[in-house]
Length: 180
Image (cartoon, rainbow, N blue to C red):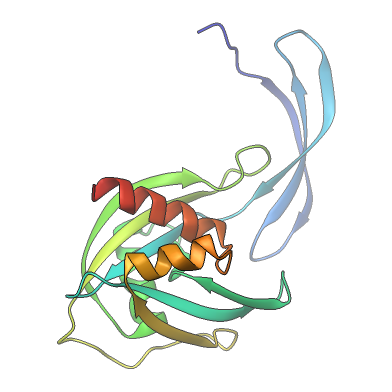
């Protein structure tokens, strides 16, 4: 492989909130050219949760997403807290959003937008303990309906373009390949 990494020359923080920060970066490219206006977004890593019940159905959520000003079908997901293990984050987030808990394993991780963001999403599979369900502890902005669907029903949603969430589609693709 003859590819070479870019050399980071300078970083300047442009904007910061509790959810993300934006940096302006200068790089020296492998051809020697210096480019000083690449913008980079820093966001916390998060988990995408494939929650599976005893019928081998997957838990999906329907919720309003302000970014699209629309209702979105997705899977449970959430931020990984500082110094938190992705498995622990997956179990915590599933419990907070749905009241379910269970046995978890990491299926893999994906880059969300590698061109301008350093964020990773860990795909967590959780086999739900259907005998141990509690009341969800949702945030004020989490208005969620949940439902279990078979992979055939989910495939139909995908083919009919009724689910467009990139995280859900990516996580389900990994899950589906691992179960073949």
